[in-house]
Length: 59
Image 1 (tube, rainbow, N blue to C red):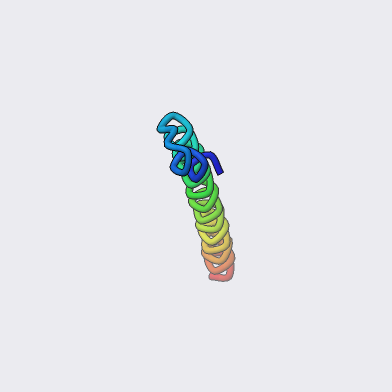
Image 2: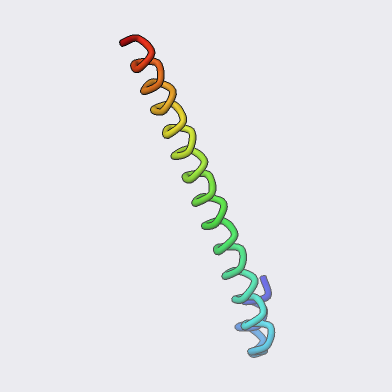
């Protein structure tokens, strides 16, 4: 909203502030996505480790 308003009324400060807020939001979404991917990878690694232990105990 600030980006659009700043562009319409010619206020560079509002435009820059709005752009900074959008950039921050995008960075936060990206970080959350990467955290979810990392958590999923950790879960897969734990499952593989458990299977490995189970196979070792079967021998």
